[in-house]
Length: 502
Image 1 (tube, rainbow, N blue to C red):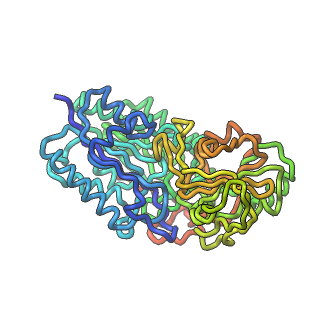
Image 2 (image 1 turned 135 degrees about the vertical axis):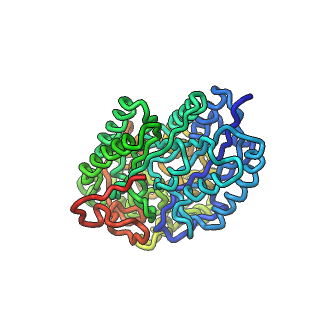
């Protein structure tokens, strides 16, 4: 008989300092057999499903729910997810399964549940037929991995790359470890360590330090310690307000506890040694534009981490837009998420002009909407297919994305794509689907931190991180943490770090 594998997905990166909450209606939900249609879509779910077919597993799907990064999840949303999952899982478990596989993000919090994935795993393990079964799955590199999560799992494997070009590959790897568990009839456990460091997203790129050295250590351990099946370096999500926010290390291990702890301690020591390498600072956007002058050879990318859509920001910040109006260049391109502006253009014919207010509605410290005389260039339904099947965006949504109703407008030398749904700028199909060729522009504003690099670095003549107002500032000390375990670097002075092991 084919091994029966219960499958579920729960994917949300929660920014706890945003004012708006995330409701159940904000999640894209796929149920039952419809989940199997995700095979081939480039997502982690696809990676699992394709390996399951290769291994001859009988996948028993339940529910897959995912939403783009946004504010604290409403309690009712989590409880709705659990109700839908439990209703499907109970009969599957009653019939008998060999294992469980989950696609998780790992940084979801609700109004009253700080560790949503840990809560989900504990509830799942308490269901009849789930205790003692191998539980494997994947985590995002920006998860807030908790000891509670690791205590309930056998093999959660985190992405190794940021941008997350290996999301599908990580699911393939985790499925391979589950296959090994089933074939060899050996049950690994997870070891865990918290390092008291918080790095903002721009400091967690895996093509730069400190992540290069940390990943190299993890790879060496995996290569030289056969009893450690996977070594996760998880820098975490600085906009999550939880006890475990920040750097965590975890392993999938069949080694003796002292060996597991020793290898985790090696990683913790190295992370602490490199802690200052994860801090980032960058100049105001106006300073950079003044240095570039009006005719830069482009494209020059102005990267705006403070309005990083991939970290939950509203994507309607006006900092770069205002700076480009004050320091005009030969041609510039920006995207603003503003459904109200799109609606206000609905009666305007293509080629028509009107005065339009754009952006500045989603963050209290923004200067507010920018009002300009614009010409309507085009409008669309906002659907596009990703050009890069391994892009960071594919890890979130598969190979298609819905920007909602869109409009392209022009003001002088400035082209603006207005969207109705937040769209992380991780694939050039976002613009090309609207008839815009990014390579034609002298300057492009990008609301991201790291994940844009896979698609923008190859076309950029230069790229600059710039400081603007926004909810994803890299100054982690500016956020009013209430739950974060203290002391933690760089918020506190620490003479001797305390590493926590489980």
